[in-house]
Image 1 (cartoon, rainbow, N blue to C red):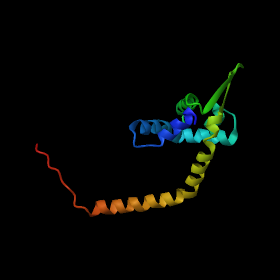
Image 2 (cartoon, rainbow, N blue to C red; image 1 turned 60 degrees about the vertical axis):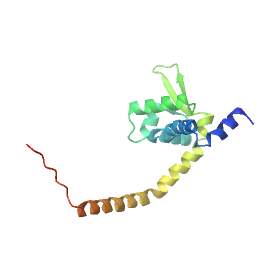
Image 3 (tube, one colour; image 1 turned 30 degrees about the horizontal axis):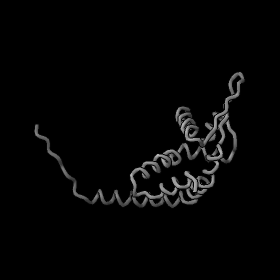
Image 4 (cartoon, rainbow, N blue to C red; image 1 turned 180 degrees about the vertical axis):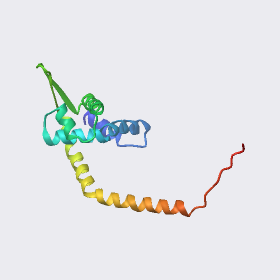
Length: 146
């Protein structure tokens, strides 16, 4: 068994605080909205330039995309290639490690698409029930001495 395999198996024991911290660190990176979008879009489209990515990801700011790409590069999921041209051309693509995320992210993407309507319905029911409950409770009045 390799060192990586034994570390992977040892991380599965979430009763240990260090394992939970390690798992949280990884899941926080790959589970944030923009990272999922970047990995998903690079997985579908291959190599892309910054502005191509920005156009494909609705709502992401230039700063947030820059930070997301930098963090994904730091974690070994994305490579950044700079070509010495005027103006410089910079391209991003998934690494081999990044490509291993394609299947789980595609599954998450598909699940989100298939279940979005049901989630919106559940939210409406929950919100209506919460509003009705709040309306039925007696109002508490606070008096201020002046």
